[in-house]
Length: 213
Image (cartoon, rainbow, N blue to C red; front, side, top):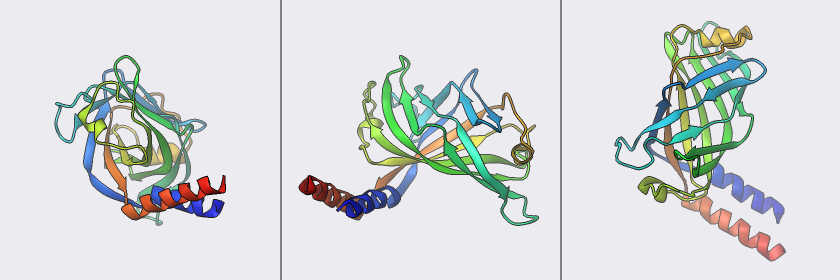
């Protein structure tokens, strides 16, 4: 019984249908990213929501995204001489949240391990951090219409682009450099909705678990 329940949960996580980009965000005044070999990427507030589905009318605009540190591992050139580098990103903590101006939670989620991608120097192509978020709570203290359209168990594909043309990020990671303050960053969160079949399997797993109890 346990195996069936575990499989259904895993399938619910991995089987998603992607939609268009929904939330755009960037570093506000005083915000920046930093990197240290023993701590990975860290982010200083504010990371501010700039738009929701291309507009600035939703009350979510102006709210802040809080990220944990992201450790980098297995970072290497994908093919010899390609200049394309990839690595694994592992969150120091799985918790991620969107908060209002008073620090109240609007949305909470679990951050899933992802990857970092860069082509040579960041001056050529800005490096991108790519992770998934699974929604765990929707307090929605600001009555955002967009947040109201979401459901717990849905998620986001989260892409974060680091922007600083003076930093060769691939070399920085490979040579274990510490960057105390990177420049700006921008991000996008794209809603991902579990396929109906995955939701059905999750419901079946939950039913079997209740029967077993």
